[in-house]
Image 1 (cartoon, rainbow, N blue to C red):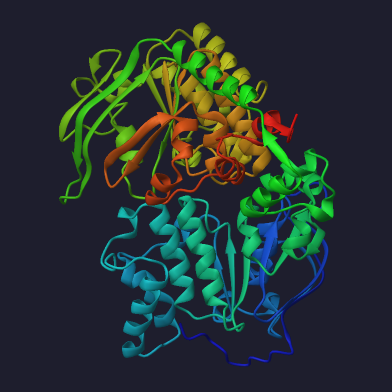
Image 2 (image 1 turned 180 degrees about the vertical axis):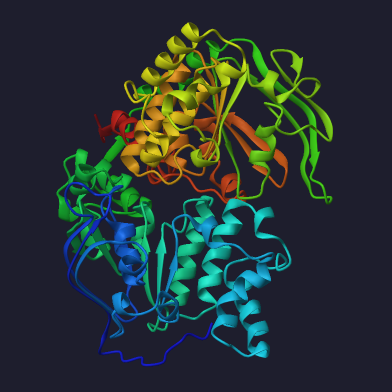
Length: 578
């Protein structure tokens, strides 16, 4: 794709930041950014990492002038993008120099079809009409949206919308692109595709690329990693060195790479730590190490013992088909049984039918053909209100679910609709808030909470009605590692207390460490269903569904034994000959 190279000078830095500091108007303590000093060279691919609240998005908004021109506060220091100061330019003018893909990518889309979304920017910059057709053809190919040029953005999957948001920025052909968590809604191979796209875009070293990301594994492909914490630059180095700093990542709440984490806990010096599964496999053999077969068998026995404790079938689908208005057949005959007490992950690439499937479980959708039964009752024969008594649904974005002025009212709403007495409502709300670690927050405005806290409010609102089954659609999207871990420990506790859990997710380490069983969707069909350890062993089948296993699972598979976490592999590891 032809880039905007006006004013390109390989000897000048693309981005210069001097003593940048910012405090939001609503911020009562501290600063969102504190004395940031950075230079980014033309053509660099830089990954910006850090926990929630580190200042990553604030930094991105300073680069294109949203701060301080639209988002007000106390602004100090200076930013230059190719010699231009964004604070003194119109944001619209800066768009030709730096393109920003927002974390909330859906808020970036507003046109009536994909084609119009892509050419909106070029139209505003008076690009000739003949040139626009070339831009559309280039962009849809780059972001894998071929054939969807006339689709309304609202009808696209979350991953397709995300790629469209990236494409609309690429169409302007800026010299710098900043992507704020561009892979949050993508399947694992889709994530890899975005980073492959990033590599291709800056191959000629004329496009400068900044990516804000939580995924440490993807950071391996960057030229440089910058870690922010509490508004400051904590570290700035090449991935090969910085990703070995396992304690640094863990200490500030970023998930360290699993391979160096495993070998560090075996006592390997930091400078000798491998970073990839292949490097880990070679190191494992060189030490030499081995897998204790007796200990490994005990893990499989624990899996089997847990499965034997499940109750009766609580949810079943037979011959389930669904065709959306307009003729798209999304489900093509699903047969599935889920037992009481199970924790099932529903996996598949974007658009494979995962969300369509689970929306049948509580009556949000009615089958075109086939049947879904919960506790032996046909879901389609009742109302969504009735199905909600047995099956609670937590949406991917809590802001699509929350609407009340206080946390208490949000959690109490379904109980009030069902006519519970006020004394009982108060007790149930308090129990639900206690279960999600939000005790005492009933009078807070839910929209003043962090996303992780709002996600827990949404869970509490479902939990208060005491459903037997809880469905969670991407419960960790947009959360940093600490928030993801906290959310999943909550879900694990709910499962241990007897709730059946059905979870859609693209976060594969979450699947490996928490799910008991996996249902794998591909093109509207259920292609595999089995125990987590069994399914994660089948890497080829997963790859065909655009999924890839976590680092530690990949290493253990190379060793001929499927471990689901760093702790499991450590448990099974012995010195060869012991």
